[in-house]
Length: 377
Image (cartoon, rainbow, N blue to C red):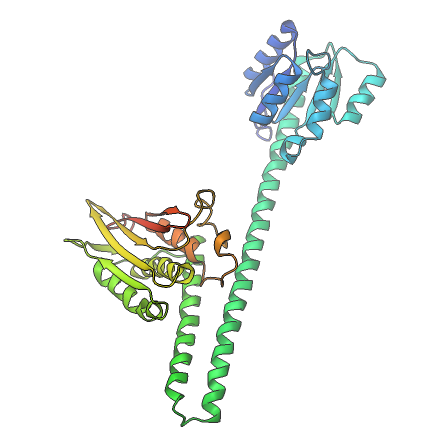
């Protein structure tokens, strides 16, 4: 029995045949050649297996119970999933007239082999078709990945230009006020606004650069020892002023023993900032945002809980995707940086995870599960 060459990788082959004396030796030979063999003895079973297993090749008889091979081939080529619709088909049939061959090719069969056929020929052809199929799918996956990365880069650039434009308008406006009347009573407020906007742009640039470098594997995070309560205190101090402006209370529930960790202080600060910033931006006035830490053995859990609009269950798995926006807040202003996606990337880089527990209309609790010390640091 011929073996597959290096270029012909074994794959899944579906044999659709109702005659056991033909089916069994063909299936045995394909398995011996290294293929995974699926079997259907009628057209309806074949359709179910095709949708579930997505084989790399279908060896299809025409004279079948329930649905014949003509109908199976026609339905396959009309399938809405392009991956399924493009599965190659070799028709193996006793209907060997030119008219039947042309009909099979018109319905979308890739090859028409009349019975009796050579099993050796079927094995060789199966290897070629499966190899070409796998190469095509690999190229399609690469193309989709490149297209997705291009789309993400486009959205990232759009977001950056949007944020840059907003902050430059602020800087320009307050600079003009200072230029027109540098000694006015508002000079101090103008300089404060300019200082905040410039800091915002610097922090945004550093955040995005760090996330992209970690994501691409071009940067290892710098680790240091620091107490968690000190970092949380910094976050609360930074966000106290915008919180008071929205009549929001920031609260820190301090446990008896707070851990000292060996992680990236910058990365953890970005994660907490993204979560608190989200809660402030999308939550209602008058809410309470609670930060807490639960140490446990060699790990600890940071929590940021709010009383905001919450996240529907079908969206909770998607909120950590890049640039995804929850429908309930789609009309509100775009958040800073890469938000929850950045939190996910940085937590993963430190050996941790970010999860959410949420109920629409009640609020959300984000849980950051991290090791006290990263094993690779």
